Image (cartoon, rainbow, N blue to C red; front, side):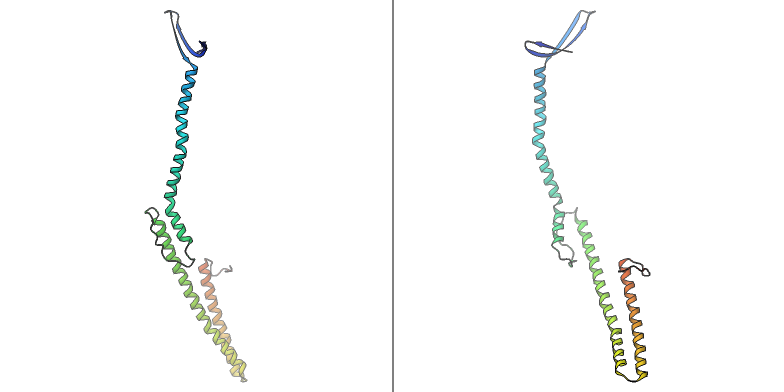
Length: 191
């Protein structure tokens, strides 16, 4: 290979010579023509790519946005719900998202059951504590009002018995609360 200037143009020339046969072959290529072809090829490849790249990016963005729209609808529905609303979601969703809504509805049902159970336990505990406390108060009033030693002693014994019963009930409620919190009943962890 060699570069030659022919009529003011630079040519790249390849020469092969067979001296035994007396043959010399010269092939040349004008560099300006080669450079122009490379430029046209680059413009032919790069320009469509520069035009198509934003178009493809926009189409991808629209596709992803449309594909994630059902999740956005679910998120909006969840954001607008009150904290104590455990009713199943009734929004229409595509088949791909249906397992998510079914799992959320199942979770809402379990939460509703758990909160209802906790309210029932709280109501029961309040009722169970009220009875021995009323008895303790009554016995204390009897002990205050009487001058008889036997009556006072009997009332004080009933007060001690009522306090023991109440302490057992409170202990049972604390054990239940620890179980609900995932703490071993015999441990000293605070609630």
